[in-house]
Length: 125
Image (cartoon, rainbow, N blue to C red; front, top):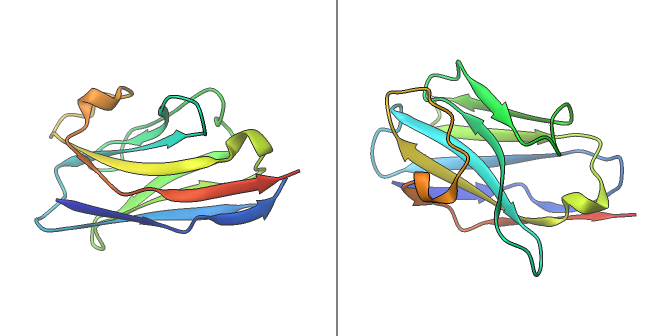
């Protein structure tokens, strides 16, 4: 599976962005998907999770209520809608895929099998 993240950019605090992650290479319906982010000088951290059928989602406390993860399996694409952005949200955002028919939440990097290349999100104050 190849993952291509897009949609990053520069936005003012309080603004919104929608990230997309397109999967290709093989059918991806049995993949749970996650978004992670990495700010300069910091470890890559979990942001959001969605199960293979979209029935379960989970968020880091820092983004809960502001970010929404969703997926369109017909398009093999996962989205991350980011609202009320803050300067602390500035990071490179990565999407990741975990092979599974289970909806068990995965928040650790090692739990994922495939990674996209990342897209930069910069929030100015």
